[in-house]
Length: 177
Image 1 (cartoon, one colour):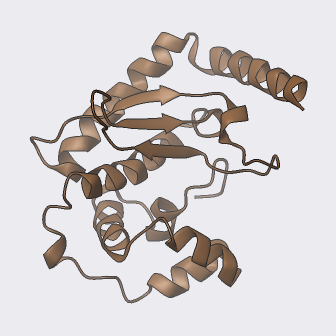
Image 2: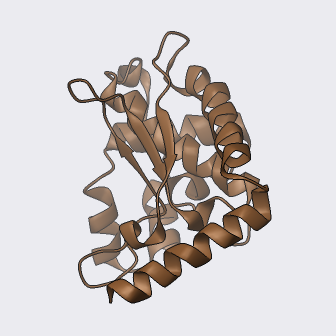
């Protein structure tokens, strides 16, 4: 299994280089997007998270199932907050922007969710989640990591960015817009 993951990671690296020309070009783009979106989503004085791209093998669960296209890690002790993107989201600029916006809503929450008291859960939340995830157990699993205030803030962010509400909740690499 580890040989398969190593091969997948090498293939990811080749595709990233083919798409972006270099890792530096990709990381520069990611930092520009985070630098642009962070103040709009988290507030002008919010610390901008570090952005990393990690191998696909680290995005899988214990049994090889797909786990995540991106993750947020809040700051801890001497470590800054991080947005981790996996190769599945870095090939399309629109998906990169959507994934980063989603993870920045997590960052906003970890910074204290300033303004959350005035946010309201959109009335179509359950219908959107049902459309995006289908099965109740998948909705429940997703909701376990996404609070009502996250969803309410994501609705505001999706409107600001001109994205469909469901897309920012659950971006799908390569999915139709």
